[in-house]
Image (cartoon, rainbow over all chains, first blue to last red; front, side, top):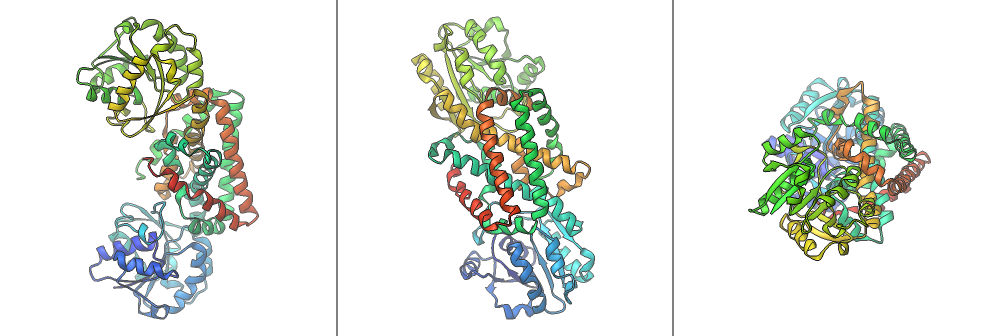
Amino acid sequence: MRVHVIGLGLIGGSLSFDIKDAFAEAKVYGYDLNKANEERALALGFIDDAFAWDELHLADIVILSIPVDAQQSALPKVLDGINDDALVFDAGSTKAKLCEVVAQHPKRRNFLATHPIAGTEFSGPDAAVRGLFQNKTNIICEVEKTAFKLQEKGLEIFRKIGMRIRYMDPKSHDKHIAYVSHLSHISSFMLGKTVIDKEQNERDIFDMAGSGFESTVRLAKSSPAMWTPIFKENKENILETLEEYIQNLERFKELMEADNFDEVFQTMENTNHIKTILKGIQ
Amino acid sequence: MRVHVIGLGLIGGSLSFDIKDAFAEAKVYGYDLNKANEERALALGFIDDAFAWDELHLADIVILSIPVDAQQSALPKVLDGINDDALVFDAGSTKAKLCEVVAQHPKRRNFLATHPIAGTEFSGPDAAVRGLFQNKTNIICEVEKTAFKLQEKGLEIFRKIGMRIRYMDPKSHDKHIAYVSHLSHISSFMLGKTVIDKEQNERDIFDMAGSGFESTVRLAKSSPAMWTPIFKENKENILETLEEYIQNLERFKELMEADNFDEVFQTMENTNHIKTILKGIQ
């Protein structure tokens, strides 16, 4: 099995590690616009060699793990370059526009639109880790548009690296993921900004920060190069969540200003059952 | 060493465990308005027995680990009840009003105002864990108002359970802690609320939530009974942080609406160095 990975960062690298571990016969070839990343991936051992774009026709599997805006220009070219039996899948955090871009492509059936919901706040080849996808969810969109044999090939990979599968249409995916992922990143970045702006001249204030703050701002360590395109692609959905979030914060502030602490308590109490909802998320 | 703990929840229980481990000769007695908590604390083994309020004079150390509003009415009564050589310390997340309340108390020198910055999102006796304070910061306020010998007693305990000490005046404490702790809780509760409100009829949407969301809403599992009084006590400071946070979110939203994604990128990039600032926080 010859796997070509385009984009050798956190996701591309972690997928490469796991595929090499799960498939003894797999050879992984890597491509990155940043040639230093190719060298680093080789040194870390998650690719066997680099590949040139005109070698794409040799691939059995192509993984597209690059920022979501770059995916949209790259995917049609990748499909142009592959052989008829190859499977291409992506790992992007938005799905609607990508599916739209290739809707009419003659090799649409070679593409499987996926979003493995796994990651860390780190990026680049050195962020790649083994086992990242174990017990995580992989959302597959428009599965019916992918050739049946290639669906099977993809599912075998996802199953062997430990993922559970959920099927969803691209628009629903983008709408819901705005709530459970994209908004968290904005809330975290802005929390980090608020505190840094205020405390920039008093660095030792961060001695006062406990694990709660660390947990809440963890996502503010994420890569702006990866997240800016996501915010751009999923703008409409994210603006809606952001508006609701701001309204909730405004309302909470008004309750505090009015000394209505019974309602402050009640609001938190009503949200508290997120404990049970989140049970099972690692 | 006879230690009396008032409030047998996460903090009172965890302190009891660690003090018993660190001081072989320590006997810990517990008091809780909820008598079921006393029984549970006995069963869990972090207290040796319950105590009655009129036995306070027997204590060498009294730990006040109850919600911050309850502390303000309880602390003067505790000071009334102790013997002249006893040390009383609290563990509350706000300090200015508590220090004010006992400023003129004849036994002010028996009190050490402390805020051990440690905790989890869980509460009650069953949330008590060993080693919670290891490598955590303990903020001590108005140390000069505590008798020197009792300062020493307190510092010995904090050192033995693994804490590092920072000194701060109560007003600065309350101002800064609003940024690095209290605001995080509101951002997290409101994030949880925003998502639950939207997705309440589609529970399986939470299958899409990854570890990033879990991390960002973790604090929304916290106890409203503990946090409502904190928000009330530290209202002015928290409103200021909340206003700044909302403004930052509004500004981010405007940048997105205006398709100014260069600035979106830049804003995140500027916050990204929180990586280095947070190094060292566990």
